[in-house]
Length: 147
Image (cartoon, rainbow, N blue to C red):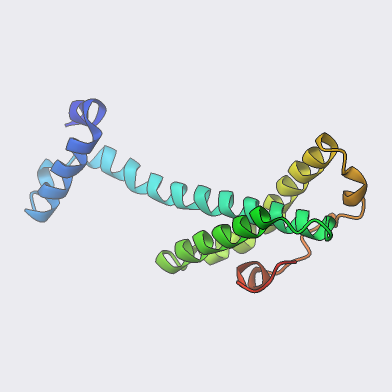
């Protein structure tokens, strides 16, 4: 079964599902099934962190450059929020992970914002950027909040 897992993942996954439906548990590729189940959680957490970083980055840009109200930033904020809300709707336990990752993700978004500001010659706008995330989870998920 492991050979099929390495050779044709899609076929392997369909066969595992068929075995589960047929209650043929003794034939399951348990080792790889466990790995895939654990990986599902990692993927959701990585997706959540990625959407959060995009959201924070564009909220920072709006905050630091209030005269430059880019529609692309607003669209990016809306899309990131929508993706976060969808992940949280299907996996509510990720809300705690979101709260736990805000500061670290904010630090990364802040570094990216500073790097981009230097690259585009607008770093003067970013001098007063907060060192810690100025937004709560509720604000970040509020569809009417733009910083």
